[in-house]
Structures are given as structure tokens and as C-alpha cells.
Image: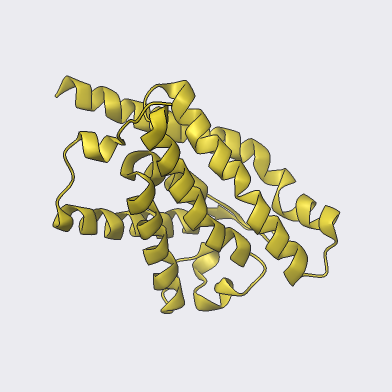
Amino acid sequence: MSNDIPLSRAAGLQSLPVKAFMVVAGSALIAISAQVSVPMFPVPMSLQTLAISMIGLTFGARLAAVTLLAYLAQGAAGLPVFAGGHSAPALIGPTAGFLYGFVAMAWLTGFLAERGMARGFGRLFIAAFIPATLLFVPGVAWLWAATPLDFGGAMNAGAIPFLLGDVVKSTLAALAVAGGWSLLGRR
């Protein structure tokens, strides 16, 4: 794959104050998207992965990962940024594997965008879908270890119900970022 640049770099958003604003705005977007959720037990279905995919595709690997670290730090500090208005205790609860996995998801999405997957709906979809699907590895593993669920139960509670949602959210993220590229091209 060839080197490519994410949308934010193509738009010239490179100064330190702008990047700091992007981290704050991105972590706020994730916090808001976490509150748009369907309460399921023990893992709620939220729009967090949609926001994280969009951030990874537009910010690139490092800035996306820093944004997710800022988000986790906000929750650790007691701010109600996690799904259902939860904060620090969620970092050791049954969904903690997903929360920590968000950092890797954001980084990998951005990495793929920087490696030739930043443009075109199909490539953007793949760059969003692969990391979103890999998020199930730490999420289900933590759920399996932290609850009385066996592996099959952890898969049924933490992965299977979310697969279709990953397809839909990856599609929406790819469409939004492709639209951003289109708008940038008209400038």
C-alpha cells in the first residue's frame, strides 16, 4: 500500500493548537456518542465505535490514539464519559477490554488511513471495519475473564449482537469521510 494522508492533514490542520483542539473535540464526540446507547447487559450498544472510526480515518494513527487516551483519562478522572454515564469504575468492569481496545482501534484505523486506505468508500470501509471487528478480541477476552460467562457466553454477550452494527457503523464512517474528501476537493 502507498503512503496516504488522513483528511485532517490534507485540510492543513497541523498546528499544535489545532491538534489540541481536535483531541478535546474528538474525546467530547466519543463521550457524547457513548451516551447514545441501547442498554444491553453486560455490554451496551453505543455509537462509540462510529465516532472512533471517524476519528481514526480523519486524524491518523497517533492523533487518534492520543484522542482515545484523553477520553480514557477523562473517565479515570471521574467524568461520566463512558456509556450510561459511567466513569472510572468502568475501567475495571466487564466492558474494560472494549474501553482499552478503543485506543488500539483508533490507532489501527488511522494507521490504515495513512497506508493507502484514506480515500474511496471501499477502502475507507475496510479501514474502519477491520479495527472495529478486532476490538472484539480484547473486549470478549476481558468479559470472559471478568465475569462468570464461559467463552461462548462472552461471545454471545460481547460480539455476536454487535457484528451487524459494525457493518452499519463502518459504512456510515466511510460515507462521512468520503463526503469530507469530496468537500475538501471542491475547496
